[in-house]
Length: 276
Length: 295
Image 1 (cartoon, rainbow over the protein chains, first blue to last red):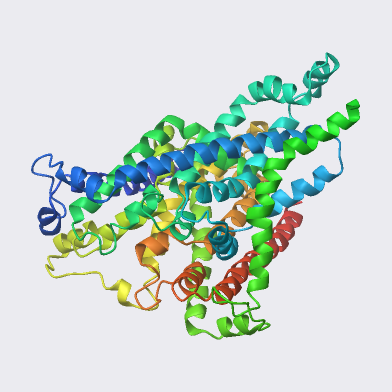
Image 2: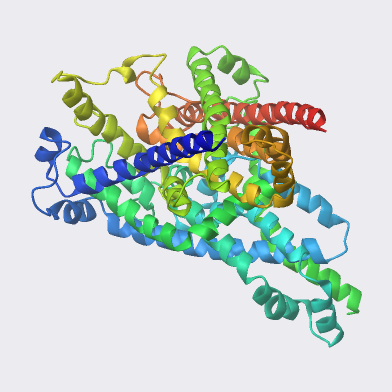
């Protein structure tokens, strides 16, 4: 018994180490390659950089317009995430603390929304935005981001707010507070833990989003980082050094974001599978 | 305004912004898309109604059938690859079979933060003729001219993509299972241990049955996620070479935005929705059977 357990734990360690190396090695190779000039990457893929060659970063940042893409990604992620979380919270409050029949239907509609993919609306959305004149604008990206973020965030908010005791809001209402005051002064402070989970989870999704920006925009002034980085793959640049530098620029901020907020991100993913 | 009127008004005000956006950006376009899928709309003029013409053309298209096959392989790798592996890893972490579990967990979950586009370009480099894999194989075998030919094979070209998907998503399932395993009451396992149950008995008799619900939910995630797989493949191969790695979402994208066949593209996107709903219903049927068996 004892011996079998040790064998099992050795095998477990081997498996864990294998998966960990599978994550670390590609990323380490990417970062090291970003400091090598193109010729060196092609000739000696496994060699360490000879010096800390930073021209790749400078050139990919300027030639690839990564600065403007970075700004756009930041705007999209912050604005869309803030509004998604705010609307989801107010919807969650309405759906869990008001005794109207329509709330069940609306909850069901949002739940069905979880199954709808971007692809099933992308064609009409493109036509609609072109007609309204908001394709190729930041607004035209932010609105769909909010709509697609809502179903899951409404679900998270509703579940959490349901768990907050009714007594808290009832006594405030009796004291003459309006429902809006209850929402802003009582509910939002109490819901801070779920708000941060919602915010971080939504932010991550928006930051990495690709197909909406790809189809709804064509000007580089409104495109985001993933779409910008993708253009390094095509004809724009055959310089592998620049490509690796662009990949590092796209990855490192997210790795830092991840290391800081790992538990919140994990909670967001885990909460999705907890619904029964 | 009476109190009950005020209450009702507040209720609508809280719901309005979200519902308005959701209805105009998701519900209305889905209906619109369904309507377009029965027409030969090409971007201008009045759409001409052609019934099921688009659907008939799609399901007899060789390229579509290959895309469908690729999509089903992606569903298979996520349901039979990522989920079991994620479960195994979560189980080992939960049972504290390894030291430094937190560190491993952090590293294995990490790919989730990286944009699929970045992941795609990174792995393209790794598999390329000046990439890490080729360099390692050349060094190990001494064959200095070795290159990877797998992308040139119609049947096998999807394999590297399946591997990368496994790399990206196994950690996600690990995190989901880990969170759910920790919610299990430890007393059950302790009681079983006292009664002399060994690891594999506890796994089969206690842990797996209590996880059926979670497994089914994650499988729903996996299926709908697999059918919409787009970003990674679009950035890795664009569906090429010669449609070898195409999936339905890319098939739809190319037809819509390269050939401006809006009606046709809408029909393809409706097929994605239908497939997702169909597979999810099938899955719920199967998981209900399982749950009954464990009861």
